[in-house]
Structures are given as C-alpha cells and as structure tokens.
Length: 314
Image 1 (tube, helix red, strand yellow):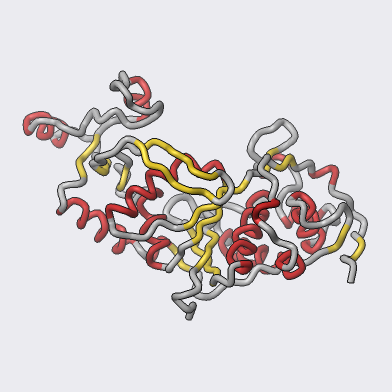
Image 2 (cartoon, rainbow, N blue to C red):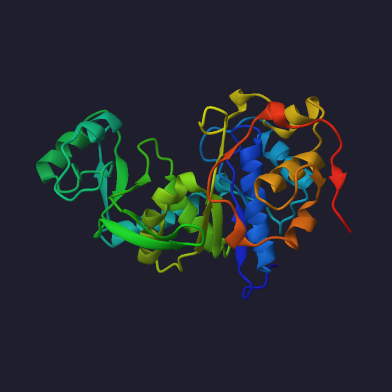
C-alpha cells in the first residue's frame, strides 16, 4: 500500500505497440518526478482502444529494463468500465450531459460562435428541441454523450510551463461506439489511484484545462502537472516506430543495450555527460526539475553509438 500522505505519480501507456525511446524518456521522467518527491509510483494500461497482442507485457519488461519500479497492481482500464459508467450516470443525474450526433467533419465545418476557442465544440446539439431529439434518435447513428460545460476557459499551473489557460468546451464523455472517452477516464482513474502528480508529454497540455474542469465538477482535487518536451525525429515530427531503431528491441538489435539507452536519455535531459554510463538510481541524485530542457529532443537513431559508454564518476 502507498501511504496517502506522500502522494502518487504515475505512467499510463497505451498498449497498442512497443514503447519507443520518447515514450520511455517520458516514463523515466514521470518516475524521477515521483521518486524525487518521495511519492509512490503506479502504472495504468490505457487499453480501451486498440491493443496489440503482448504489448502490455513487453512495455512492462522495457520499463523494468530501464530500472523503473512501481507499486502493484498494474491497473487496466478495461477492468474499470463500471466506474466510468457510474461517473457518467452521476453527471447525467445532475443535468450535466447531453446527446450529440455530430460527426468530426460537421464539427470542423460548423461556424464558430463569437468568443468560441478555435477547435472547440460549437454546441450544435446542446439545446435540441424535443422534436429534433426524437428525429435524431430515430436515425441509425448512435449518439455520443457530451458534458454540458459552464465555462469556456480554465487556467492550470504546470511545473514547466507555468500558468496555462486553455479551452474548455462540451467535451465528449462517451463516444458513439459506447467507449468512455479519454478526458473522462483519466480523471476518474487518477482519483481512484490517488494520483496527485501527472507527468506526461506536452502534446497533452492543451487537454489539461478540460480535465481540471471535469475534476472540479466531480469534487476531485486537481493534480500537480508537469508536461515534458516530446521526442521528435530528424524532420521535427513526433517520433514513431517508423523512424527506425527507436524501441528497446530495435536498439538491442543494433547493439544498443537498455543501460546505454538510459544513458542516452539522461544525456538528452542534461543529467549525464556524453558517453557517461548512468542508471536510473544515479539520476535520482542529480534530478532537478528546474534544470530540465524545455525544447523537444530530436532523436537520431544513427547517432547512438554502439560502444560501451564510460561509467559515472565515483
């Protein structure tokens, strides 16, 4: 059990494939943030969407290979559908949800209302009449379920980005295929696991005000956030498996071991000198969030040397 007074950090990958080195870098950062502040650390598999056979087990093996540990059990969202349904029922009973039949294309093509943030849902289905509802319910397309938000913006505080104000629209709670939506499940799961520190890629910063608003509606404490820079390929595009030797298995085939991968990640974070051999435990003594780079890391697989790196001093 994790003492409730120390807080909890987490890492929550999607088991749709093997983790690439950018994912592993974020995982190591989440672990460092948590352990550096004497927090517990938990894992959660976000497996409500596509799942690749054996991916979850390989991801756990890769995290262990880097020296990352966690408190059991590993939570799987697929085991928690009833909790999401109960939360949606609670919001519905409060009059805070409504059905929506809009397609993505219709949302993109809809004229935006004055002062509506770019990309926000324009509220097309928010105030349908009884006749309009009956007409849509008689069709073949099942509805999604949206939150009836009362604000357009919310400000959150991020350890790396400072105060960030972002859009809060009528976010989807349940997709039209019946799957609970990400912005809902992440709030429910973090609360259930006692997570009070969320470290993840900065591509998710823009969705954070929506999650913080939903947490407030559910009387859930908003976590401390740290959105860390992502890993990019040589073209400046988000790193993906198609970029070559980017997973631990690929790197191992090229002669790069997991300990060397840790050292490469540490160098990218300013926590190790070039060619210095370090472990995850070594990094805990050096970790200072204020000194972390704020720019994306451009990873070039061809630049990772196969030679054995030199050990850390002392």
